[in-house]
Length: 87
Image (tube, rainbow, N blue to C red):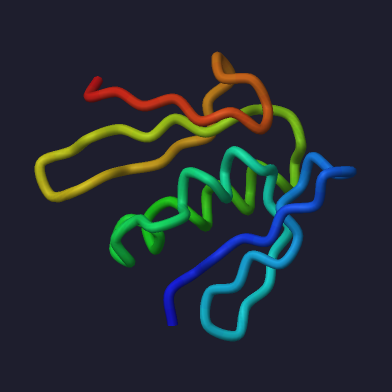
């Protein structure tokens, strides 16, 4: 099953992100980033986004690496935001 997000106008969270049987509340920009991505990218990035959402302090940086992508919580990225690069 491919993930999807359901967004509510009154919330900064995308409530109802589903991946298989797992449901997690993610900031909208995280859910938007994941929407339509290849399942391998979602698998690599989503756990870091969930950790970021649980902590509520910093955003997520997505790095291009030779075999795909790597996600890290990044103190230089505001909470709820996603930055990309090839460091």
